[in-house]
Image (cartoon, rainbow, N blue to C red; front, side):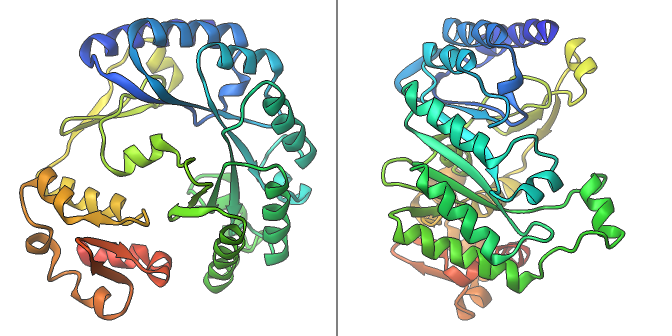
Length: 339
């Protein structure tokens, strides 16, 4: 970990020279930053503050595993202006947490949130998962209601994506674990939308819900294709027309191997604007599309959007294109038509 810290410090210096941006958001994670020793995190955050200029109201988020976060670690975050925490709660049921390979219990979630609040953190997110093997609608409801008792400002409700090469994928392929069917997962998602709306949460993106004024600014900027710098092993960045990813292998990163780069074509950039913008409830603004790409949205996608418009999956009004509630369930199909 000490060697990794030194590699990150080297990259911070390099990136600060290459991209002298004023930083309005910082996001520490994925992975599990809370296993990082407090001393090492102190060194990294000190370097970020030393080499980059942050806005006075910068949103600074750190992801935390309820089973590993400590008071020492949170003290370091507080010291360096981290003002938002995201806890990977996932589910309230012990058998589902075990299946996911999580080391925490729901009691750990409760104690971690209480610890964070006692130390002055009040902008708190919890990540929850839908569509898990063996997960029932009642499991989802129980998890959601337990999460709400902790008074979060933000909740992320993600549908499970089973990645090839993982233990879960192998178990599903063997028939040992059964995934919920599409209709069940849609019903669970609709239940989340209804319950959270009743508790004062606004849905501002397909998977994200917040109390008024507590949207995740970092994620919002990514959906608007605002440039971002990625630092650390496997980190991604997006500046100008170039997207890069640092070496995902730790040894390659420690040796200073260069990032893999991809130049985004104008056509791909237009599609990304639609793909990311349609994830949000505000959708894609015609004026913003023109300013970004120099072409009217209607000229590029007007014809391709006719069928989803007729089917009631999207709406085009008030100078913007956005998904309907039914369209949120079928976003992939809509994107295929746009492609």
